[in-house]
Image (cartoon, rainbow, N blue to C red; front, side, top):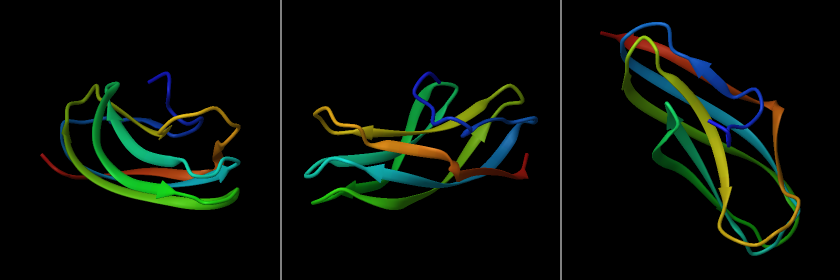
Length: 105
């Protein structure tokens, strides 16, 4: 996924049900904007898990949990999208985590 946060992309090694957990640091340099944390599976957006609207520049942690069914060639990634506008807000992959736990076939 070209919009994936650096370091937050996983390839799932087997078919089945997976629990995906993400915790992402977002450095917000904009005000009055809405940010959306989203999981993509094979580049296709999945359910939105977290919305953030901030009034002033600040740093936040956004969390998301998803349960998906995947095949042995699936990849998952986390993206953060901003509602509109320019600015220099940044998701910090080095201070974030993405974990996939296989829950069975």
